[in-house]
Image (cartoon, rainbow over all chains, first blue to last red; front, side):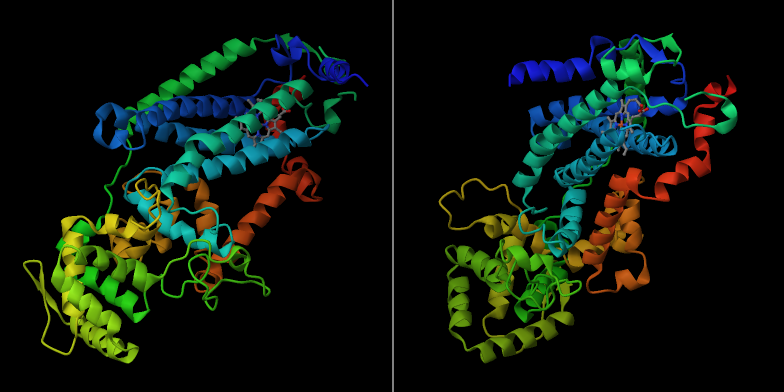
Length: 202
Length: 312
Ligand code: HEM
């Protein structure tokens, strides 16, 4: 078997240039419900960019620099917008039953991205190196310990938490989001639910 | 389009669309919104709570933190895994205690790590501390217990005058010198450093704040948190300082801690943790869970979402 040829075939069957970068959409893609995924993605991009700036100057820069504090505020509000849009995205996709016609893969990958986002925000709060980090670290450790996670994930080990927050989790999260988008584009937007009196033929 | 999408969209009318333009417009609008929010509301950055402040402004609470450790009744005493082997307080459900699996991976010996070690460092500078420390170490455990009990009782009635803790005379052995040493170490701002230092050859670098954080996690942190409305009953870690939205996405998690049977249960953390894992699995497998995956059909929000399509 020629692995390269096989790969070509899989890609050809599942993704074309028109799938990846569409210039046409089914007419039912005409609703506010489609905007939340794009807002989530935009806010994620914004948070990554501001996060790179914060990381480049070091974890304590923003305490002592006005510019740093402003970038921190951008990062912070980016996260608030991100989670608002993410929740709206999840809820609308639920009410659209958007997992139909094989799109459960998109749903499952999205859920993993959601869980990773929560973990990422959590390590972010712990990485602030301020009172909130102190308090959250000692409060949250009990839950981690009770679940048996505390033995290797130590909320009070700032070096570990910071590298998780700025490198490990974001890389995995962005990878999941990337796969989510590939599957979304490869499958195309799911058809509206059948409505008996709509007269639409299957 | 690919074979798959060609098939799926057969008979579906298409309209023209520009993915990149839409993406750029949304990114632009979202960026402006975030920038405006950041300019108007800024972000919280409440300074850290340090031993120096506690020793200076709350010297009695500061010293009580250490006497509680000597008495074996601080939060960290007998905590169990991952800090020590004492498993009687370890949370478990149906006989399973996940914390026991990995065991003691972050060993903490409260008396040694929080009292003896920092004083041993101070003793290099102050010979009185050395003498008292030796006296303490060489005493029988009954004798030590007497001193500790006497001292901690006296401390409950002590007064702080100009930052000096005044205690009635009594049989305290070396404890007054030791406690004063810890107080001065705190005031000098060196306590956290003394706690973090260990004898590892890589100790020059230290990015781990486990010990300094564990020391004041009890009454001291709680009183700070209380003054900032950040206690568990105020929805704990989902809150943050000031009037900021905080981690509101953790509300479902914080919610379960508000249920009386959970908040008073000795296994509350484990229960809530498992409930959350369960809820996540429900969401994850929602597409294939009977009844739940029919809800969208019954609720009919989809008719609003795709109303233009159904109008055709
Ligand atoms: C980091 C988080 C996420 C990002 C950046 C993201 C982004 C997107 C984008 C841009 C789309 C296409 C536009 C749209 O239909 O809205 C989409 C589609 C989709 N997303 Fe997400 N998403 C995320 C998380 C989630 C989560 C948590 C779920 C649900 C559990 C989910 C489920 C779906 C589904 C089912 C579709 C396909 C919709 C269809 O076929 O019409 N996503 N996502």
